[in-house]
Length: 205
Image 1: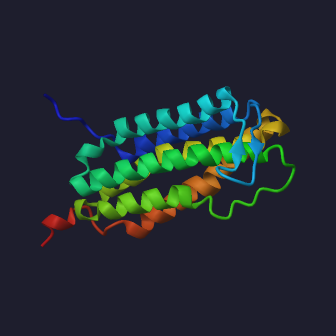
Image 2 (image 1 turned 45 degrees about the horizontal axis):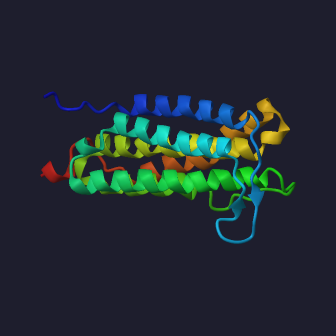
């Protein structure tokens, strides 16, 4: 049986970009707005169509990311486990966050995304750190792979927040949010953890 072939980081980034545009456009189409509450999950009365959009989008991004990254080829059980853990946790967290942002669409108040950058930063930082012993190529593939999950879902949530402003405005807001709170934090996290050189540290003299 032929071993699975991992995809290069540039291709993974391109797929993430395409999914981001698609997610931003989907979120901009106008969806039923959930109720904002002050207890529990802080979101109530989520329409099935909106839940299907967000949860289905998260599942799609997770599957595509796994196919591209091939976590089993990241070099060690630690790197593989870290990637799966971060990707799944990030997807689940962003499902809730996107629904929360959709509920804010109906409040009329400003959205202050103080910690939104963490959704993309933490997964990329953890998986790149876990892959330090296996070289830059593995680190880049793992970190950029988390972006296939996080960046499109950030775009979706940002577009849902502006869903009542029109398709083009909401799409622009979604893409702006993806760059500011998705691509930027992911890039910073990756740069902070990259090992020098191309050889795995385990084989270096």
